[in-house]
Structure formats: C-alpha cells, structure tokens
Amino acid sequence: MANPSSPEAPLPVGKVSALIGGWIDRLGAVWVEGQITQLSRRPGAGVVFLTLRDPQADVSLTVTCFRSVFDQVADAVQEGSRVIVHAKPEWYAARGQLSLRASEIRLVGLGELLARLEQLKRRLAGEGLFAADRKRPLPFLPQCVGLVTGRGSAAERDVLENARRRWPAVRFEVRNVPVQGVSAVERVSEAVRELDEHPEVDVIIVARGGGSVEDLLPFSDEGLVRLVAAARTPVVSAIGHEPDQPLLDFVADLRASTPTDAAKRVVPDVGEELAKVRQLRDRARRHVLARVEREQHGLDGVRSRPVLAAPQRMLDGRGQEVDGLLERARRTLRHRLDHAQSDLGHTLARVVALSPAATLERGYAVLQRGDGTVVTDPAQAAAGEELHARVAGGGFDVTVAGGRRAD
Image (cartoon, rainbow, N blue to C red; front, top):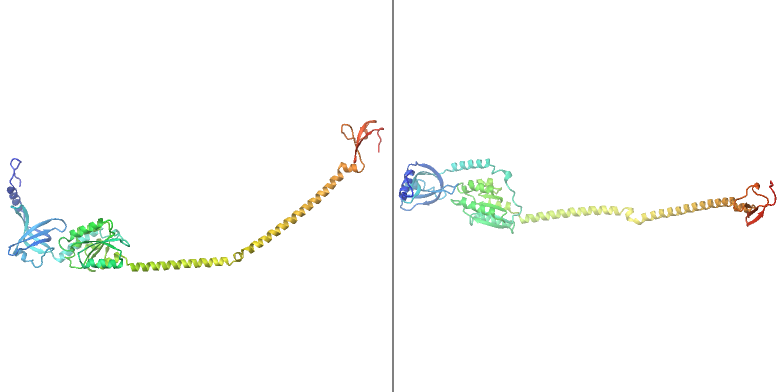
C-alpha cells in the first residue's frame, strides 16, 4: 500500500479507500467464531445482515451472506446464538466499511461448547481461582444484600420473599439485568462491579432460574469469573437448579443449589435465632441457679459449724482463759511482792543490827578527835587530850585523864 504522498500532493479519499480495498481483497477466507448480536432479514431481500460479536472482548464485525446460505441454519439461529462462519473480508469502498462475506454458517455444537468450558475450567482451576482457601465466609447477619437477577423473574421473587420471611429487617440492593442473550455478560458484570463497590452491601447474590447450557453460558464467561474472583464482597452463586453448574459456581464464595436456597443460606431465620437465644438463656439461667445453689449449700454448711453457729461461745472460752491467766498473774505478782517484802525486811533487820547506830544503842561510844578521826587504840590518845564522844543519844566532850590502860 506504499504510495508517495505529501502535504503538497495528498491522496484523495477514494484512492486511499481503493488501496485499502485492494489489500483486503488479497486476504483469503477465514473461519470466524462469535455470537450473533443483531440479525436482519428483510422480506424479499436476497442478503442477510448479521453482527458477530466476540464474547470475550468488546469487538464486533458485520457479516453478510446470501439468503440461500442463511436459510440452511435459519431454523436454529437467532440472536445470542454462537456460530462459526466461513467468510472472506470485504471492503465497501463507498462507505469505508469492512465486513465479512459468509459462504457457510455452522452452529457451535453443544459437545464443543462443553469441551471448551471444561478446558476453561481446568485453566482457571490451575490458576487457583477455585481454591477453597480463598473463599470468604459470609456475614452472619447481612444488613444489606445485593441481588443481581432478571427483572420480574421467579428467581428474584424467590430470593426476596424467602429472605424477608426469614429476617424481615433485611434490606436489598437489586440490580435487574438480562440473564441470557448477547448483553447478559456485560450487564451482569456491571451489576456485580457496582454492588461490590457499594459501601453498604455485605454480600452479593447472582441468581437465575434453570435453563439450557446455552442459556447459562453468560455465567461461565471468563471475564465474569475473574471479576467475581477479584471482588471484595462475598458472592453467592444461585444459577439454575441443582444439576446446573456454570463456572460461576466454582469461583463464588458459596454455591447455592437454587435461588431459594441462596436466601436461606445468606439470611438467618429469625424464629430459629430467637429459639437459640431462648435455649442459651435457659441454659445460662440453669447454670447460674445451680452455681447459686451450690454456693448456698456450701455457705449453709459453713454457717452450721459450732464456731459460726454461736461465735460468742468461742469468745467466752477465750475470755475465761484470759481471766484465769490474769488471776494467775496477779497471784504470782503478789507472791513475788510478798517474797521481796520478806527479803527486804530480813535485809533491813541485818542492816539495822550491823549498823553503828545499833552498836551505839547497846551502850558503845565512838571517840573522835577534833579533826574527825576516830580513836581506835588507847595509844592514840594522850593524857589531857580532849575528845568528842558520840553515843546513841547524842555526843559530849571528854578529856583523857590518865595514861594507857589495857582492858
């Protein structure tokens, strides 16, 4: 497509479109798989227009085919069907539009769909998206439940009625979306993302009634599965009936067999909880009463002991002991005092008997010189010396008349 061009010599639009068309014409036919999102069959027209969309990406292509080609699958094909188309790219130069001219259209078989789902399941499981240890527990009593389901569907009615019957105060944030068809994956993903970001939503339920494998395909979409795996809010999958198991069941934090089962497992039953409260209250009352009775019995046993039945009796006995000890102490003290008094009298008598005064009382006298010295030997007294004689009744002066005389 290289062509000389410059600001001074630009190529006309028609020339550029023709060049693009020439390059596309050299492309060969290809087999393309996608989902039919729009189908236009005008009466009397010999060409049928389709819009083929990639379910894994937001990409669409226009497909045209002759009515004879489409009539071969017309009874089985509708909007939302997955098909495989053998087509050659075409460029409509007048409008600058690319389309595919289909020469053959085939429906994607159920067996092939199941095989692809199984392959995707193994790949996601290998990444750990289905591991049990990454699943989060549901809140015991969610204040607000997010619900993603079809508008006016039986699944919506089952979830709301059963949940409110079990716990009347529960609140819901409902997002009504298509649950099958070409826009189901996108709308369901938007609803889950919005509820996951909602600050009041505690748990999200994705609910849908039963259906064929093709009807439940949106809930096995890889993008939706990864979105649920990355969600911060616990997600409950309630898709179809018990045998139905889209990939959303494996990645969700809880898989409910039906929408009714989801309501029962997300919201507790107020009657059952009240019964549990009553049972626990009765059990606690029995335990408390048994404990009180046991302690009362022990207290009665202690109070029945003699020391507590008549506590003053112990004091009386101790008082008698104190009185006895006090009387004994008094007797002992009196005895000691009497003994000491007797010893003191004997000592006093000996002192009195041995004292100089007692000697004087017996008629003896003490002779003293003028300087107070006592004369104990006649040789100490000279004739004519004046001495002082001390007797029991007092004293008087004497004069030594003669010389020494031995008695």
